[in-house]
Amino acid sequence: MSLNLSNVTLTYPDGRERLTALDSVDLSVRAGDFVAVTGPSGSGKSSLLAVAGTLVTPDSGVVVVDGIEVSELSSADRARVRRDHIGFVFQQDNLLPSLTALDQLLLTAHVRRRRPSKHRAEAMALLDEVGLADSAQRRPHELSGGMRQRVNIARALMGEPSLLLIDEPTSALDIERGRAVVALISRLVRERNLAAVLVSHDLDTLSPGQRTGVDATVHMQDGRIDTRVAHAAA
Ligand code: ADP
Ligand code: MG
Image 1 (cartoon, helix red, strand yellow):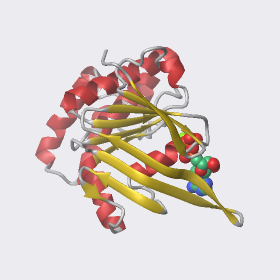
Image 2: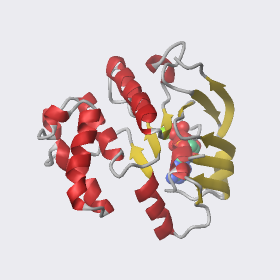
Image 3: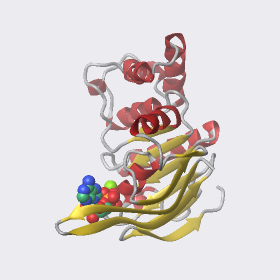
Image 4: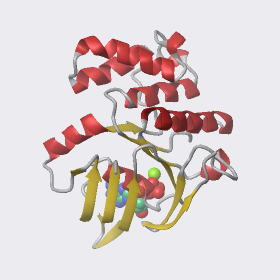
């Protein structure tokens, strides 16, 4: 099991009270599984990703990433788990304006301090995988929104994480490009045997009817998972 959340509760201070962002949440995602999380704004989707990504420690419950129980780890050890096991894709691509697509990926590798000689080959292979081999030397302003999001996805996969966490990756894109991004993630999940969790408030527009490429859809409301629907393989 690449991601396992059991009985996770997360609260934030809210005046004199506490606001419950996650309420006894259970979620398991295996390698090769692409799970979509949907639900209204404020229902806890980003909180779920923050906890799964070890960025936020829940009040209670167990979080296991790649077999590692992260709940009791020091913050340095949690950072190591993030670096070695988890890739993040956020709504904003957070690309650095002055760097080429290739350098965006190499910068991540540098931060991860892996063997430099391998980084360039890995980065070029990833850009090729997302269809940007010819754009490796372009800077963000020379790329379309969809292409920037693909650089963002390729960057998240540097270092071969096993868990990919994606928060609203399509909200800055039109429907067509949004669907292409979801299809790309789905392909990468299969090819790389990733466990992936994609959060989107507008999943219906992206993938109406049968949710091609997504294995299961989870719906959140008020910090709880109220339904989980498995989709037939396409
Ligand atoms: P979603 O991503 O579904 O919109 P969030 O997980 O961002 O939902 O938020 C869930 C609830 O937690 C909301 O009521 C939100 O206002 C609250 N919340 C989120 N982050 C914080 C924070 N850092 N401090 C206080 N409250 C927060
Ligand atoms: Mg959110």
